[in-house]
Image (cartoon, rainbow, N blue to C red; front, side, top):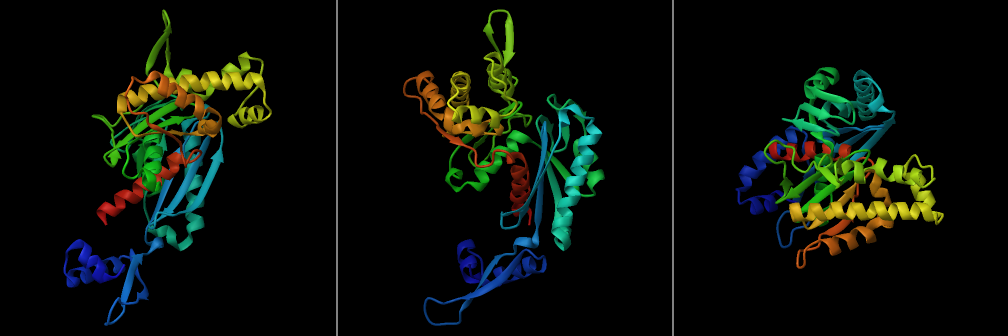
Length: 354
């Protein structure tokens, strides 16, 4: 928009806006664009727009068997994506950190001269994170009590902040999907583990210690004397184990999808039972958080078209009469939600501190 329009909207003088924009131009954050035709008589105004390459944000997600990197510009566009696959949960911690450093250096090489505009990196992990840098526990990776932010800051030579993967994934959905901007949502992250995060009133609902929404380790006693966790009931391993018990060999979600497309009856029954359990978990989330949307994210969200009907049915049949039924949605960012969300968090924070 023009300087005059910016001044009008912000209720500031044109002189103040001119001074602010001059500073932003000097910092490489905004640029003048094509002249705008005036509505009446007078000189044409000049549009002022974001200079996309003025800041670069990098988000990296450490998963059990993959690592994703996303590069985002100041306009909020994803300009590069990288990934590497390995069994990180079975390898030494040092191996994973070395692979992360390689991925980061590759991203910098792709950026070329623009690499100087990277001011910080955000990394997500499937575990409990405190104060943006301390990993309390990531059982699924075998990591605990780790000053991960400090370690990676020294390793990469740039400030590194650490986020929980579910929190970052939820933020990606809310921040980059306009239809969710004015609504509350809970992201149920379904991977090898199960995580969750809630966004209400335009912000992450983190709780007193930044750990709110992490329901994967919630204990349930379905059989007297035997306690299991929600992760064991609706995680990836739960479905694959059920299929193996039925005599069907599946190693990945893509295998399950192929069986469903081939109308395999055993696979269909196993997925139906798994979806019913997922619906019960969604009902628990709806009651606990009273959100307008429940978003299924992570690798298992690839089954959405096959399970949505069952999950919604369970929601409607288990929630109390009159309780609002949340809209069930599939995540836009499934395989790389943590990396996208990490970059988006950096982008959002920068706009508050420019």
